[in-house]
Image (cartoon, rainbow, N blue to C red; front, side):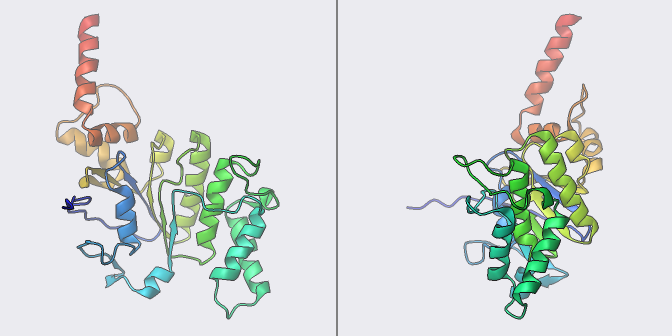
Length: 262
């Protein structure tokens, strides 16, 4: 007998054009499932609830204006960045556009995402030397930017990147948001300077919402309900500790250390 499991329970939130909503939470908290639900990929799979765009239910037209960047890279290693995007544009852009117009869209996206320096470098993989990890992530984003989406959903785009590369990637997302796009992304251990770039934050724990609101107000909220910091730390680390249920243990451990010094 198959046992059902509740992956998400009672998640509510909203994100507006020009904003970045970051979804934080430990592994298994439901981040990827929530992103799939927002992208309309869970219809008919035991999914209940309502996802609306501009106060209207998701439709095929809405899906066409939604870009989804998966966590895993699915790129041909022997093609250059430019060849990859041209190949994608020929497949995904409308037949009403000429090849020259599709190539023009590619040139625009390459420039917008800062890929000009590596446009003639092959993608590569673990066996073939190619673009860097940060550039590879931007190529994935460029794949979706070809269709000029109004909503861009990303599943842990900074996973595997160092803090500097992750910061540059989120700066790119910020520039896209400033142009009126809506950005929804799950994040894996963001640094403090990356966290400061989030307009809104949704913290998940075992499929439930611990916090939804402005990123700058999260610390004050948890302090108001009795979870205050006894020492400075990255807000994202603090929120993940809460979601994992380990903050109380950390607080007791730090208190024991301070008592021993007394």
